[in-house]
Structure formats: structure tokens, C-alpha cells
Length: 119
Length: 116
Image (cartoon, rainbow over all chains, first blue to last red; front, side, top):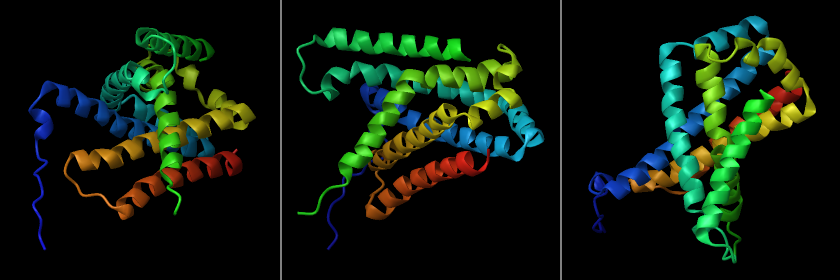
């Protein structure tokens, strides 16, 4: 028996709210690709200096930099939404929503500064 | 009743989401933009330096955690986004996405243990 299936094409283009949702979901593609680029880098590192330097050199090609700029924008948006919805994803706690979001954004800042400092 | 495996995958998704939210943007900026364009010294990601990181116990743990959690986060979300795009997902596709993430994590672990 064939039942009715609601068509799903293009629904997310109909409302800006859905468009932002899909943009956030798109961050998963660049996060996956970034992890794979790092995995390849690890393999090149294990293969020796020549192979590793070749990998590093490829990262500076225009398309690679363009990918990382796109990845940076999408992942930064993911970061912001991750903490913006935190009051809803956390169990109910007696802390105001705004304070939870502010703490999250502060944590992004602290972790970014730490990472910058150790590199 | 059969136990659901959902909490396991959701935890991995959540941990990867948290890690990428906290350090993702800065990490991508350093490794993908600043060092390749020369904004930061190339030595930041120089061979000797990265080799030392991969040989260090804490470095190994950091690299493994980063690759595995980013993969689980990304692929888990991708699997659920397929539904939003109208692709009818079943256990087969779910296994494929989580399996791919697990394979990537396994590859990272083997490289870190045997490669350095």
C-alpha cells in the first residue's frame, strides 16, 4: 500500500527562521570535513617530513583557504547557537537564561584565548 | 525491553558539539587561515613541533579526542539532517554514518599508537 508522503523539498526556503536553522545544520558538513583534513594531516605526519610539508603546502592553496573561511563562519555560528539554546538543553536549574548564555559565550572567549596562547 | 543506543550517540554528538563550539572557530582560524596565509608563523604548525605533539601522551589524547568527537558530532547531525531534506533514513544509513565516524576514530587511534 502506498501512503501519502508530505513533500519535503524546499520547505526551509520559505521562512528566514528555517533558513538560519539549515545554515546551522550545514556546520556539520564542514566540521566533518575539517576532522577528515586533520586525520589526513596526522597520516602525513606519520609518513615523514616531506609528506607532511606537502600537506601543509596544500592548506595554503586558495580553495583550501576559502574552505576554511567558510568553515570558520559556519562553526562560529554553530558556537553561538550552541550556547544560545543552552537554557533549553540543560536540565532546569535556578540560573537565569541570560546568565547561562553569557557564561557560554564567555567560555568560548576563554577557550579561544587559551588555544591562541598555547600555539 | 531492548535498550536504546540513542544515549550513547547523543552523548558523543553532544560532547563533539561542545568541543567544537568552544574551540572550533579558533582552531579553524589558526590551522586553516592564519598559518596557511602567513598571518601566523609557519613554524606554529612546523613538522618538528607537530611531531612532538603526536609523540606526547597528552598530545595524542588531544588529537584523538578532537578527530573522534568532531566526526561523531558532524556525522550524527548529518544523519538527522537527511530527514529534514526528505531522505527517508533507516537503521542502515544510521549504521553507515556512525560507522564512518567510528572508523575515522579508529584510524586516528591506530596512527597515534603505531605511527609515532
